Image (cartoon, rainbow, N blue to C red; front, side, top):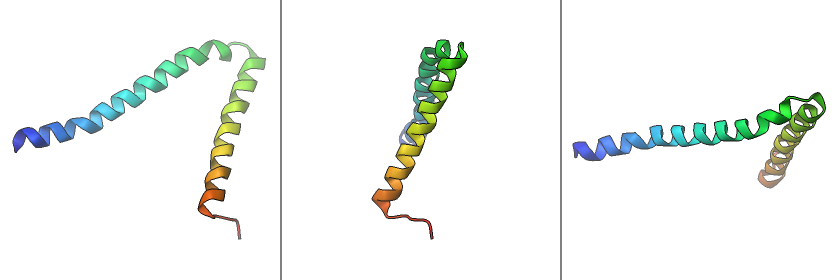
Length: 67
């Protein structure tokens, strides 16, 4: 049973490692776009717009509305 719990406790560390690896790989690919102000503004606008789109979509799907 000891081997089982050791194995189960490895999964969170594996998940964090994979998540950070994906984040850093995406950041390295987007870093050249942050060098010029025009592309940096466009990139930040696209990221903010993407988060807003997801938030509004989830609000509509789940039926949340402002009172």
